[in-house]
Image 1 (tube, rainbow, N blue to C red):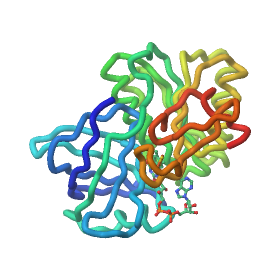
Image 2 (tube, helix red, strand yellow):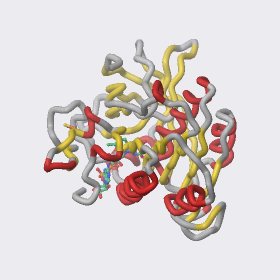
Image 3 (cartoon, rainbow, N blue to C red):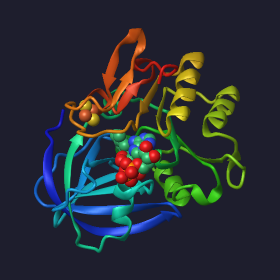
Image 4 (spheres, helix red, strand yellow):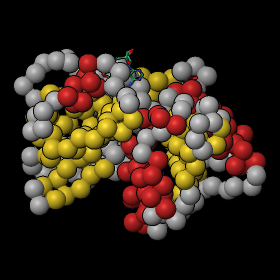
Length: 270
Ligand SMILES: Cc1cc2nc3c(=O)[nH]c(=O)nc-3n(C[C@H](O)[C@H](O)[C@H](O)COP(=O)(O)OP(=O)(O)OC[C@H]3O[C@@H](n4cnc5c(N)ncnc54)[C@H](O)[C@@H]3O)c2cc1C
Ligand code: FES
């Protein structure tokens, strides 16, 4: 497990992704352990108690520049915490605790991997694709959204997946771009037509993850699913992120996940 730190950080860049989502880049003040794909951070506004609990974000990108380490996050606006960084002035200050949790099993990967992203589930998969590309492991990306407008940066996604030697499949519920249907249905159709994958790596809303867990069990393709349960502490203390596991057990998603094998969760009880 890479050591975590709680660092001050400065907002240095922002760009709009879709009408309701945007990306932000923070320059970290001091060393920060290189995160594993799928790990997350807890983000606070420095000098403010609001919102009271830090907010959890998957890491979309990480690098070391001449000014030190930086982190990129992608944020979907749902409430005050996620709205804050949309209008905060450049040079605004944050506190970033991380990297946290367990990521995707990069060391075990041989490929090809089916990456499945539902909406704002994309960030940890972008990070994973960059890592797989550097290891020469291929993956296909299935990116799902309700409509064409809500697909997050499809051109960049296509480039990122091409770096791994894989293909990009946009999927929209209304068929306004790419293949029509839920992203899970499109993956199912591709498996039906003979597409073969070593594993499925995914992040998105719980109904999508539940459908993938069923698909994984039915087809015998192992799945690693990144969960985005609500979190308060992010470090295993508050039990606010508990999810049901088979046999009446429970897992703390923040420390045992957020990336978990599909069979580790009782999806029907969630
Ligand atoms: C490990 C992890 C990684 C995450 N990665 C990202 C990411 O990369 N990008 C991103 O935009 N978001 C991500 N999230 C979700 C993000 O943390 C929440 O959207 C955020 O905490 C909401 O804060 P808020 O103050 O804007 O909204 P709040 O006022 O707290 O909530 C607004 C509404 O959203 C609901 N809500 C809040 N959090 C969640 C949640 N986690 N799941 C379902 N419903 C929720 C609330 O019930 C309420 O209805 C992640 C969550 C986790 C646990
Ligand atoms: S968020 Fe506190 S225990 Fe997981």
